[in-house]
Length: 291
Ligand code: MG
Image (cartoon, rainbow, N blue to C red; front, top):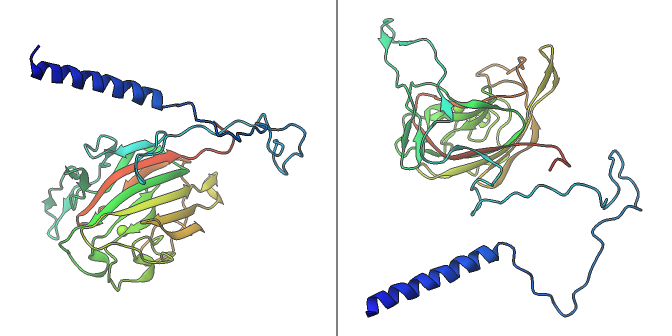
């Protein structure tokens, strides 16, 4: 046996050991300390919690579902619905709309899709709002966005896009770094309603991360019975703490609610300037005790 072959076999054996070790490492038997102690795994002689069917430390209460977190903060956990993983827009569509026309009434061709490249997707100005094929109501949403380094205008023309939750409630996306535009139009604003509590936006060309918890509004026969609430973090910094949403996104008027379903497509706004997005995922929210 020559030396090269021996080295290959040794490497193979090492790999096998590594594989076995990795497989076993998923649930290793912990080493017990000399002063190891035991405690009850629950109780049935404790008082019932107010407003709940469960007792304090109830032994019969269902344990929470196990979710594997992403490898690093911001990565999709195991129970997330990944809407963009860096490759394609197969979970998205641009709803049909009338042809664009210029000031002389001549039809203006529109791009038919947004652009995907280098692990992100970018607004193709004029293509129109991009929306998910699936519908979502109460959810946890993560997405990342970046303004382009080139600027196409000032104030509301600087890197304007938006997360249009349920296709109509906007969490603003804007290059609001050193941008004197109105407060309730800055990045992270519930557009036209509530400015973000603070402005932690990054410089143009850098990636920002939104983490949004959305409680959908409810309607009965088209009448509002419960408003929407938004909790929003930008780059890990709190912008809205379960803030009541006044109504749909509107420009220069007060937004109002118009009845819609409990779930609607999630949309991203085409405000006619390029903005980039990546790493988009959602988790549908469930109540307690639903493993
Ligand atoms: Mg916008």
